[in-house]
Image (cartoon, rainbow over all chains, first blue to last red; front, side):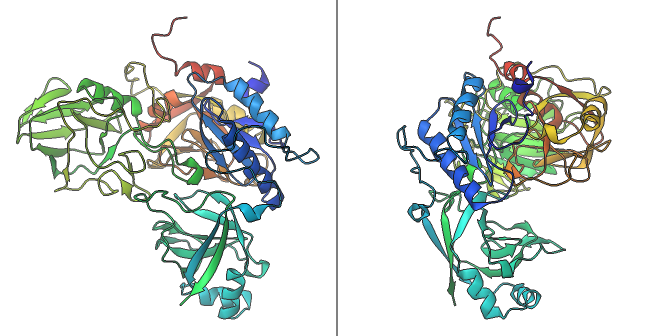
Length: 245
Length: 313
């Protein structure tokens, strides 16, 4: 077998790496960066719009898009080549956003860089009553109100969904609020807890363990398996937090 | 209706899981040993992806509200009304009690009932997602006193809930292979993972030359393996990207974690290899302490294992 077919290629931008026999990961960068992430969402949308045969699921992440396909009856190498071509169109230095050639995707249109205003915006109501709010205030040297103001000011980007169904990693947090994760993670965090850690913020969709700082809570169900759609956010969406009593 | 008259230490409703939620954090889930689930379903005339009970760690008993055809795979003792059955399949009379006593070698067994377990599907599957507490029967393990609805035994069950026939854990056309001898190391075929290049020659060599032990810290999300360290060249994690069942993640300590069906959909640990789908069930069935080894195969070879068994040369 050729080294290329065997996979394990370097993780350079543009590389297509195998994640098992039924998925390709397209690498677009090696760090958390809004510009790289813009290419991630654009590539994911383009792949979706192509409706490539055999493709089952498309998972955009911080700096890579993974495409899961049916390993039976799919031309895996042909798919890889198509993904490589789509990725090349989106590398820096290229005309990153050529006119859309395919039909528009079923779920999301392709947005050019900078046109984030077209992305869905979710406003999440928050009671800033979390058990770690005072601790965050003292560790950042800010007042409680200032922590709240700085958390609810930005428009965040959904970089990634994972950890639990519907858990959105939102960035970028105001630099003055950046703290490492708690040294002692909690074994159970209530669903709806609004939390911060590192350069990110998020809402726990389910009662799970976790190590982020809890600053508030939302009555909004971020995940409800009985609801259609079960999750309120997709990667690339925009989010704002709005203070409620 | 089935009543759980004595819950085993671990039992939950599973089918072949989801194939539509990775983009928002829902793993594929479903049976840890989809081939065994399919075989048990086939034995009672169900479609292979019908919902059944995934059962582990000890004995338990079920009472049937109506006459039912039941199959228990594999390696378990099956008693109907106190009488040990010679076969793995039995007709249970209305009001009859079934006891299931797992054997020692397999970790998960499946109790399939003609008509399937008719809990309401959620997001397209009847599987139980224990980490999130939803799906299956009230999103949790079965407890004594639970009552589970049964599907119509006069009709074939609906065709599994997996979106694609070969979605994760899906199209397992091959016959159930004989169990490997308990004494032998279990050999797991792997393809090179996306971060293969982050490991030096020594780490790669240790991956394939060493035996690893399945740790007690193993569950439906992942199996930890103990053995020689396989640290990557740089310990830095990468920005989280998609993972999948079978992914062999190497945390900073260097001891592998193999992701299982309920494992996270994304992660930042480097993945040195990925266990091929056909072999992941072999790992799933390993009891703690069991020794496993990895053997490299090409992507083509891995895909070849998934072809229908009647496909000609």
